[in-house]
Image 1 (cartoon, rainbow, N blue to C red):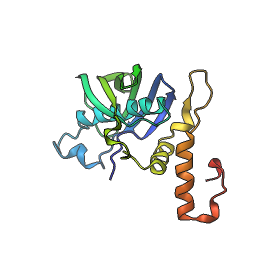
Image 2 (cartoon, rainbow, N blue to C red):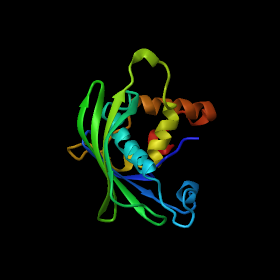
Image 3 (tube, one colour):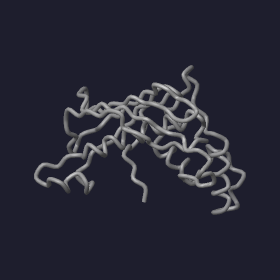
Length: 190
């Protein structure tokens, strides 16, 4: 099982910034496991939500061809708690992207209140583990669609983001393996 700490993207600008939300629910076991009388969303999971938001921003920069991993939490400060019923807004801004990784500045807010500020470093994995995908490409594209990345994603000039061809091909192949009768469908028809 994969854990998703964001529910959807609100905005996404290639190479620049992303904004995602996470709705905190009492139905999530980890919210009230630590202190049942005073349930709250763990700060470590806020960091993970910020890492997922900015990690997808870093990955999209190169068309999801690089294997991106969180390398370091450079700085993290917290000034509040997220509780059931709150909506966390995760904002990520790319500070620098290089061949070997990237740096992002992030913050988590509830309404107008900033409750976390976190600086993150990402690494691009090298060829020593070549041939080992972190995700199956068709499943990864399905996740990106669920998170609405391509619904809100834009290039800096305002043009919509396009889905990388290698992800569309993987999706097409996966669909064909499940139901050969729908191989000829276009992306918007699936």
